[in-house]
Image (cartoon, rainbow, N blue to C red):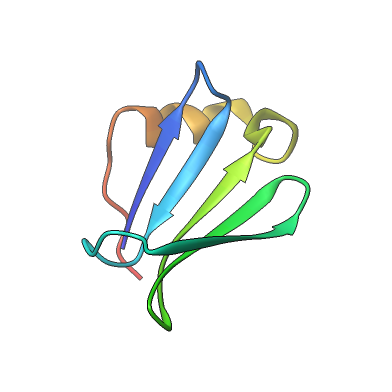
Length: 68
């Protein structure tokens, strides 16, 4: 698993796979879920600055991989 933060878009993307998404579902106004077939490949969270403290966003922005 890898997490990226885009400060210009104010969005965070959680990668579960390197597979390319074949469809996206909006599960809330600010959360998009990507699938490759039936497999979950990623989650995008919009307006992340409202949900995640600035110091934690800074760690993600530097491209630190997160393992789960």
